[in-house]
Image (cartoon, rainbow, N blue to C red; front, side, top):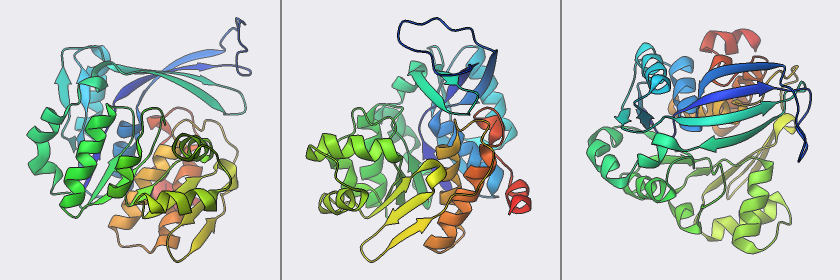
Length: 298
């Protein structure tokens, strides 16, 4: 089983010609609503790419957005969610005609995912082989989950997005840290005062307890670091429509590949391919491919 502990949002997507400049008012070409949130996107990716049972510990609002998400999870046989007396988390996403995006999140119900709720679900969480974490819920909860489940021998994958509030302490519990290019730079500046190179950052992070680093470089592919090797996985060339969920699809697919026993090179390739297929479609979860779509694309 694969477990995800993280956020559930409704994505409010504004399609624009280009990014809006400071002080500028720009007309949106389209307004759309999609289920999203980094935790949710990763859980749905796992459900669509494999037959693995998905346990998704998340807090949803008791509003219409929460109801839509609940229906979505039930359809995909995703269990573990909790409904709280609060508005659902929201993400406001600006997407340009080139497919680039900028995101502002409102935590809403996500901020109620506390250590007490984790304790209520711990017996289900420890059944998982792999646990995926992000940073759209309170960081102290994420740190608590990582410490508890690492002691149980679980593989911990942590996506430090957004970077704000992430502390060094979590690294000793993390097997795979999966930032994008901007996030690894911010982490390096926050932790070490500067950013020199990816390899330099890995060596410094390793001294803090990190085992493996997977840096998502967008259309430049992925770069992987561990104690014995560096692997570069080239990106698959596609026409990008919307990159909103690409990083989450990568993480979910990476977890699926590891759970299936794939070696690291094949896991990186499968995750990169799945992410590439996702950017050819609009929206967050609406862009997540099925296993058949990924295999046909390959």
